Length: 275
Image 1 (cartoon, rainbow, N blue to C red):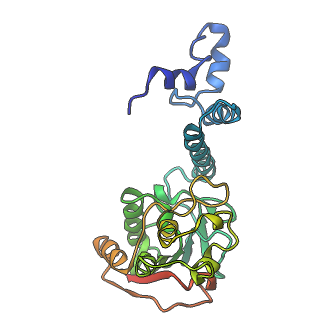
Image 2: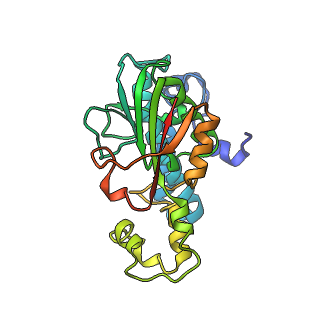
Image 3: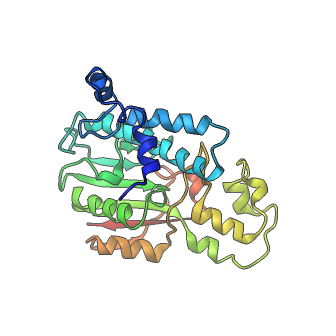
């Protein structure tokens, strides 16, 4: 993708403008091996622009999102440096993807952010050997990665690393649950609001049934605590995705509170796909 002259100046100035021999060492220190501006330099520039009162709301939103991605990039490459071929030495039997603070006993947890057994950006692939694990569990993770590229890539990767007969359990917010109640009035004491959003700072902005639908589909954007939803799913869509990736069967999963988060039982849909 091309960039405008203004964008190039933002990234490279003033270092690129001064290429005299006396500044070559300093210039290399802020450039990556490929000759592009380093992540550290880019991060500093973003922080500087965000601190400027003249920065517009729209640019601020975009830069805050970029700052989050830089943080994920750093976590990923802190691990990737130890396994440059993208395959780790560990050979876990059961893997949890994107567990956050909800860790499952007996599962090796891979996540983009701490706490995790391995910090890894799953959008770049699952760092395990082919046909090597028996079970994968993920809950309220899939909706946070972009569709179709990353979502389909992740599911294909899950199929690759599972051994024959291996299974993946996936839970997501149920779009059908939200849509089945629309159109219709929204009561302030609605059980969905109380379960999901009562303690959030967006609570006062949930005024109509459509607001609730939007939160299920999008969640909170530009928020330091929450990451937005990038796609909505229902049972039919999950079946289609896993079937397309080569799984032999995809069926509803019976909720097990010893694995899944009990707080997510209502309003979520879970499937069990078998390789």
